[in-house]
Image (cartoon, rainbow, N blue to C red; front, top):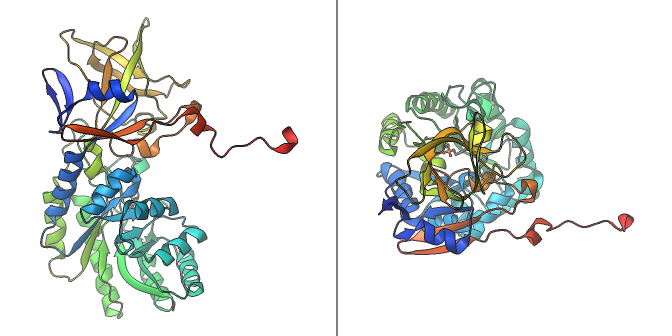
Length: 418
Ligand code: LLP
């Protein structure tokens, strides 16, 4: 990560000292590097140069408006999974014609919103959903463009919670049933079949599972052609992994090469839905050490960021490197890095070798740009953290830290209790 680097033992984001931002904004906060966001999008999109493709950034990884706006301005499309993501995407400046909508549980109001916004396509995950989209489109006197999300039954070899393309997973339509589903779609007057889609999982560190899924999708596309169902788009979903510690995922160029090679003989346009690979290593979470505590068998660094700010360590046992914002000569300790929440699961790292920090020191939780803020909550009535973006030697708060008043938003005490 070139844009998070030490200068004279001080961590910098581009040309701004992280300590300076922490003193200005307070902690905890998410910090994103504009240059890294841009470079990662360009590297991914550029890897498919010459190919008829649309990269749709996966909103769920990071929905901050400023970040969405940046990608929209670079020509990105958007992969959404809810009406809320559609709303934020449109507000951020994405053209509806570049938005694809996945998810097993789309509700009527979300379907209507997406049809009338004229999104590029729905990735449909069941027959019942298909029927509903058809009837809602009829109601709106429009045609809904769709792809069927096929579950290709390949093992992405990642954490079970983020595997999605196995038979036992709730996602997509099983490959054996897909053909029948396409035939049914063909009969629906307000459905326009334009694509085929899959998404096999996340944090995938090998090319092979993608190749296997693509082979299955191509086969199905061929059969569809024989039936006179001509599709334009093949959506491969997201899922390319990143380095959190010692993983060595394929570079986007290697990933692209595998897909492009396999697609050479077709005229299909490729859609990709990367999330983590674009934003994961473009952001960090900055927190301050509140206390040190030494137990008989454990050393604790108690910090002001908690599981409500970053769920990944406790939810997936995910590893995030923890670096000192200011390096000192003091050496290291083995400690649990824990937050203020009253749960044993409230940790950012367990038995981790970290800098020998003191009260008041700042720590950087690395690789926190994807599924960090978007998965945060107000548990224990903790206002959600601020988000900051650095651009060269400038920084700006792109989401204010929530206030206590924000915590009560929308709540009221009913008259029968007064
Ligand atoms: N497309 C679809 C349909 C998806 O479900 C996902 C992620 C993506 C694209 C983007 O995948 P990516 O390129 O980011 O791997 N919260 C978990 C990750 C859940 C991913 C869910 N789907 C985590 O923190 O690791």
